Image 1 (tube, rainbow, N blue to C red):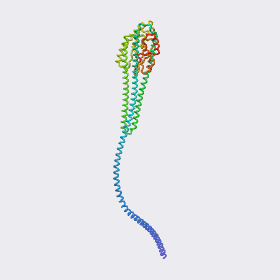
Image 2 (image 1 turned 45 degrees about the horizontal axis):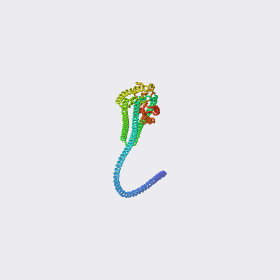
Image 3 (image 1 turned 90 degrees about the vertical axis):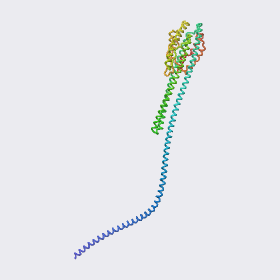
Image 4 (image 1 turned 90 degrees about the horizontal axis):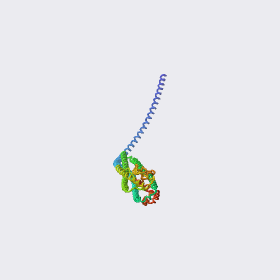
Length: 485
């Protein structure tokens, strides 16, 4: 029994344990199920809420769908209108683009025309400057030509005056030869011709120095004109270079082809300008050569006329002691370097024959006349025939400068053959028309004094005239007063 009680108590205890365990499990299960039920209730509530919201949204979407269809139709019609407007705008845009391209082409054409006009204006300005420079050069050449013409006129006047003076001297010689045998005692003193010769010698030296001065002045003027022309050419070249640089800077954006065309055109303009300068220089040289040639022709004709006059006078008269310029007039004549070789040869032949005969005749006659009229001849006037012949026939060697502007005599003691014992004279040179010796006051009264003098060696007042000639020198020979250009 106790065992059964123990067994029942053990069973009871095990039953209690199992029941407590089952209760705890049931409680846990119940709690779990309750929690699941609550979760499901919550989920169900959420689902209901979602369903309600979905229904509301569906209903709203249906309403909005109708509105969207209406808006879609409206938008479709607007889209069609917009497409039509887009096509119109595209057509207008294409037209505007074509117009803009046309305007751009027109602008480029106008810009190119403007650049061409500017280049043409620059070219015309350069040509205007060149023409102005040429006009200035032509004016200077015209002034030089007028100066040359005035110099030629003054030279002709001087030669006419010398010719009249020589004619008067010849008349005086004729009168002296007519009355020479009847009045031998009325001769002047022996030192009067020597003093006259000294005066003439000093005058010749003054003329030579003034001629040298004018020669160097002419050379300086020529060199200055050449330098001025060179400077003008350099200035024009620099201006052309500047214009080319300006044109390059202006037209550099139009491409390499236009730049090369401008460069070629500017080089051609430079070549044309150089050609024009060369043509102008060539014409200037030709004009200068023509002037020299005409001057030489005038000189040759004057020399021939003097030769004819000298031949006629020397065949009929003997030169007196007091007039040494007749023998000087028979001396050699200068020649200009621009003459041809044939003219030089012919004139040299004529001059040799003429100089030899006339110089010998004058030397002999002068020696005979001096020996008959002057028994004790002074040393200043005594001359042998050979000395007078050599003095009369020797040539005045003349050297021409490079520009053929002036010529000077080199030989001394050849101008007066009856005064060879006097000191040697300097070079005799030509005197231009603008030389101050032509305006010398002493040269004015010499012709008047020669006009008033009836003859040499006739009256006893010739001594006073010779003394007055010391202060008023006579004109030298026309050969020495030639103005060469």
